[in-house]
Image 1: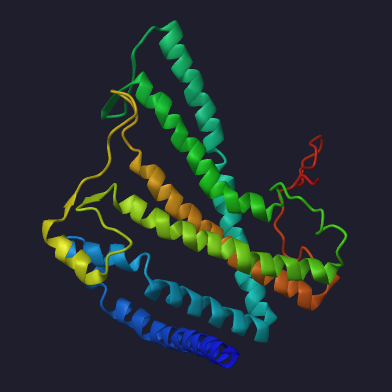
Image 2 (image 1 turned 135 degrees about the vertical axis):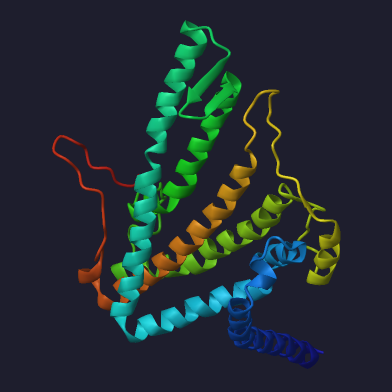
Length: 309
């Protein structure tokens, strides 16, 4: 009985490994086919192309294309550390650039809130109008609810930036007393076990959550491609424009797009953090913080670092 259980377990593991290798091999074909046939999924004048885009955006095929790309880049980087450092610098620079740009949304949010208070309380106006060749007049409640969008953009685009800058709160009960090389191993394992799977899992839910508020009939994660192509015959755009109040903000579908973008940013940062941790583990303590683009502290300002317990 034990022999049967052992052989069954080995069979499952062997089948899983074979499926993994087959999907890795097929990812080269799938990527090449998608690049050479862009009209099948990018021609959005065709309803079937839209459904293919929806299906493949959260498909096993896309997952293995991304996984294969990351594995190839990792192997190349292990062979040539300069390649891996270049990718780390590029991706961290991308995160820093987006974060520093969208951090200004906080200032816009404050200024708009001040303007809303003045318009509503001092000038006793129920709406706000702007005109630069085309007059835009919307209710005060619309502008008030739209403030949430600035906050969402700060969270989404400054998340990876804050991680690069070491600004996230972390509980270092086990991490702090560990040796340098042990810390880097923990960082690598944490990226692979926690950060990347969380980003992928959230993407799978967020992707169809987004499209259910953009098109009808609503697509589902449980439907295969043939089923979605059949639905394409009745497809039409149905972008969510309903606010929480009668004259409130009508662009709540933008929040769904931001959730998807947040997953992509977390995934990229997880891969980048794994690569940096690996390089610092291989090259030793002298490489810690190498090429880090930290924000400069001006004279009279206090340094900001991540909070530790």
